[in-house]
Amino acid sequence: AQSVTQLGSHVSVSEGALVLLRCNYSSSVPPYLFWYVQYPNQGLQLLLKYTSAATLVKGINGFEAEFKKSETSFHLTKPSAHMSDAAEYFCAVTPGNFNKFYFGSGTKLNVKP
Amino acid sequence: ETGVTQSPTHLIKTRGQQVTLRCSSQSGHNTVSWYQQALGQGPQFIFQYYREEENGRGNFPPRFSGLQFPNYSSELNVNALELDDSALYLCASSLGQGLGNEQFFGPGTRLTVL
Image (cartoon, rainbow over all chains, first blue to last red; front, side, top):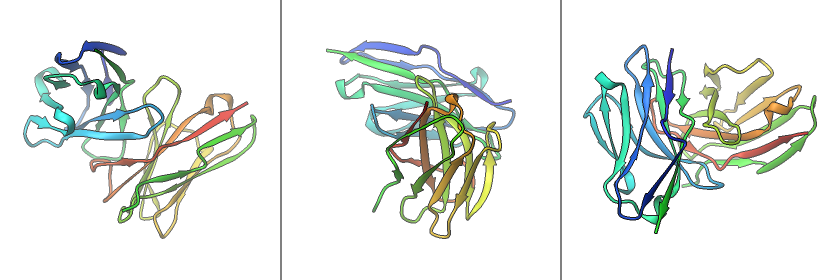
C-alpha cells in the first residue's frame, strides 16, 4: 500500500532560520515524490519532484529535498526562511505505475519576524 | 498561456442533490485529474482522465463520475450528495498519460452541502 506521512501539522520558524519539513512515504514500487505549496485560497504549486535521478532535488524559491530510500524519507529544507514562505506544504507520492496519487495531510509553516 | 480554470468558485447544494463542476485545462495539456480537499486535510485523488478516458481512480464511490471532452476540458459529477462531500474540489492538468508529470492546479471549487 502507498501512503505519505508528514510529521508536524504546524511548524514555526523565525525569519532567516532553517526550514525543515518532514515527509515519510511507503510504496511497494519505486515512487515519484513531490512537494507542493498552497497559499491561502489558492491552488497548489509544485516546488520540486524526485523522479529516480539525482537524490538531492532542487526546487523553486530556494527549497530542496533529499530522497533517502533507506529511511523512506523525502524531507524538504530551505537554509533561510523568508516571510513569504508562510503557507501550507504538502508531500505527495505516485507509485511507479502512475495511476494513483497520494498527498500527505500537510504542514502549515509559520514564519516569525 | 491560460492556466487551469474552474467553475463555479463556490456552490451550495442540499443533501441528495446532484452537482457538476467544470475545469478547463492549461493550453496544450491532455490530462486532467480531480481531487477532493476536505477542510484541514490534504487533497484526495478522485480520478484522472487522459484523452477522454478514465486512467486511474482513487477510493471514491461510483456516484463520483467524470467526463473529458475533445478539447480536454473536464467535468466532475457527484450524485446523491452527502454532507461529507463538502470540500474544495481541485482540478489539475498535465501533459501525458499518468500522474508522474507536473500537475498544474486550478484555484478550486468550494462545495458546501447542507
